Length: 337
Image (cartoon, rainbow, N blue to C red; front, top):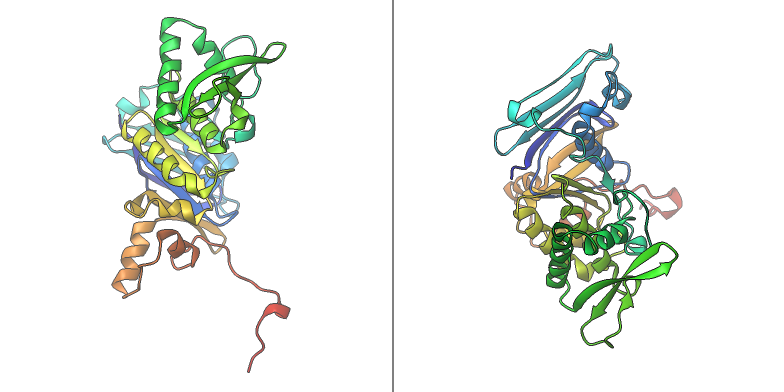
């Protein structure tokens, strides 16, 4: 399956003019309020372009842009392109390769997920088709329905359970229990513990996060692009290697492209062999900018910089941008000699 390789933004939200490359699994870093969420929103907005009336893109116009058009452009590795733009007067266009525009965009990347491990797997239920909300609620509801459903639905449940065991070998089995009337919750059996199942709430945040992502991508129609905000939320840094390896393998299968934001330098360390997959969002003259980390590293090496330090430390140092400005109160500044 193809994946987005480039994105260009013009007068969109906090961006005046910005461009970067994207990978099957892209990590997006930057200071607070730099524009990381706006980059995810750009992909989401293009994904739901067929659901919006004329004028919808103007609502995301950069505050300083009065007459210029608002534009979001995407290019895929298979040569397909998609460009959506709109002028201040409401005139605009959606154009691109016929193969890309022929598919329905509804649900393509219509949610930005900020998963909360504390609610993943807790008691849920309802009528109609289960769905997963941006915070991760709905995982137990969906998996319980798959487990008790048709052969095809049961196969999806088995795929999730098998993949979870590969990621977290001590997990042996998933099952369900009645947490309350009409509320089914997830429980697990673990290697080395008594055989009776324990609530999923007793396992690590990382395990619950992985379970939510596995459920998302094993839906009957998984999102071709999975947008994850603050992917390290609630995770211990020792889990990053396992999480990144899992997401890389998932993206390599070609079913789902992953764009994820973070503030954690230890997570960036896991991209030491693929710095091109790290996008840095920064602010210059009040507008957000985009760049790929490998470009900054090449420029620093050409200047003779010593880059033997961990990749996350290179970012944290401020040498490549995308970090908060250090403005100390005067009382904390060293006295001049």
